[in-house]
Amino acid sequence: MAESASSPARSGGPGQNRGPGAGNLGVVGLVTVVSAIVLVAAEFLALGIAAGWAVAGLLELGNIAEYILMSAFGLLGLWATVRFARGAWRQEAAHRRA
Image (cartoon, rainbow, N blue to C red; front, side, top):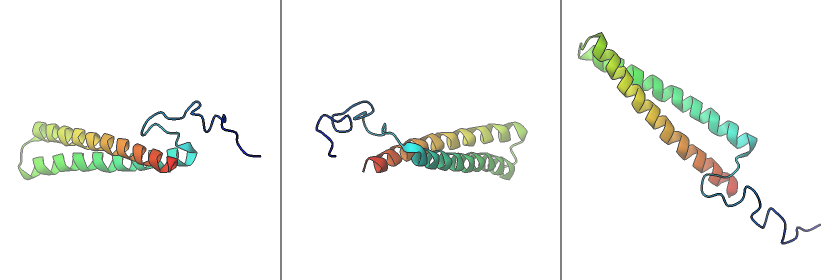
């Protein structure tokens, strides 16, 4: 049986046309995006903390400067994670719509 023109899937019913990046991902897409975000977040955060520790140790700055650099680079890693998460969410939603 064919769908009629007044079908919710075709007439922009609930959940339709909500703008870019707002589409329903489904279970597989959601698991994929969340898994990628968790992996990237762990890598970026570890990279930031390790970079702060290494720079402070290389320059012999002491404990306080080491903690400050670790925090600064860690925040930079969190910022990069947020940027990645937004992009991954948009790409997965666009892929789902295509």
